[in-house]
Image (cartoon, rainbow, N blue to C red; front, side, top):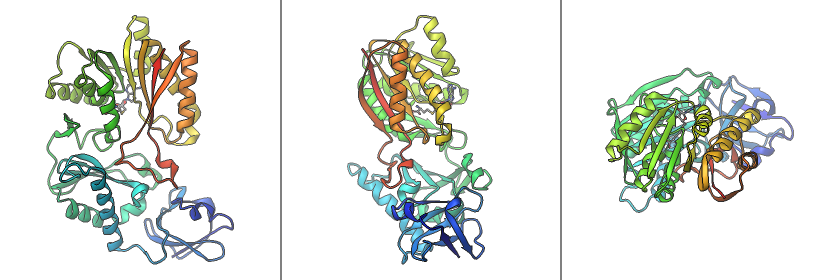
Length: 397
Ligand code: SAH
């Protein structure tokens, strides 16, 4: 089955960008089904790529390979899994088995597997299938993952909204082995966290923030902290471990807060300095100012507010609102660690939003550090859309 592109539309593929939009397609020969492999050619017939067909999505095909000799078959996918695991081993050479902890083993396009996320939590793998192409090869990939990692089980969490765009139904449950322990426990930089695999958000834990949590731990000593959008307490527990004098943690999810409290107890931080508040952070920030509360360290890690650029203007207003109000709650010398995981908001735009928030808060602020996702969430240079998480550390002067 073949896809012929319109004249001039081969350019992005020539730059190894892995997406083919429906508007770039001139002719289709054969009748590929959802997830079938198609041969993509330029208007002059020159081979460009092997790709997976997504009949329902605007991203009509996603590239498996730019090499004509590499037509995808079972072995191709086994090799892709092998390569992803080898890359993770290289990232963590200090442990005998760099794969033993909690980390992302497969990260979509960056690992040549668009639409596949695999996170490892101890001996449990959590798999998210987000594209028609991965859906087609799901069983083979599951076998390869179990075979190559030696893990006990795979739990599938293919219940993300983006599956709708691919015309795929939501699905979750045990895919290989038995049910995961409930809850399962992981260790991150020496701290213990319980992870709810079937019921938690995404695959259960935000592994991308691992090294940023460690950094906050280093900065927290003696500070009164506010952790906005705390989920299961990741940054809060890291801050306690670093000697924070108190931490107020706010999230709108009662279930997440329950696990957060449990995580605090498991690490021995259940003193009076820990406050857990179920609330909307947007409101909390306003109310806290009215009540005269002040902090020395604020972390803001909201959910994705702009999935695509189309949502950027509304997201920009929301980011500005929380950052402005957070800066107002900071004492002079206080630190704001602020994050955006919106693909639709670039690092550049995010910095401008935070700068605007500081101006409107009437505060002089200094940019001290920039953050990104941990290296087990790599970014392909030819696919900048993959760089979704960015963070800034700002001091209120
Ligand atoms: N920093 C966390 C991850 C945050 S994920 C960690 O290190 O694990 C974003 C969180 O924001 C989720 O827990 C979600 O429940 C919460 N959330 C979403 N909208 C919210 C709102 N308006 N107010 C408060 N919390 C919200």
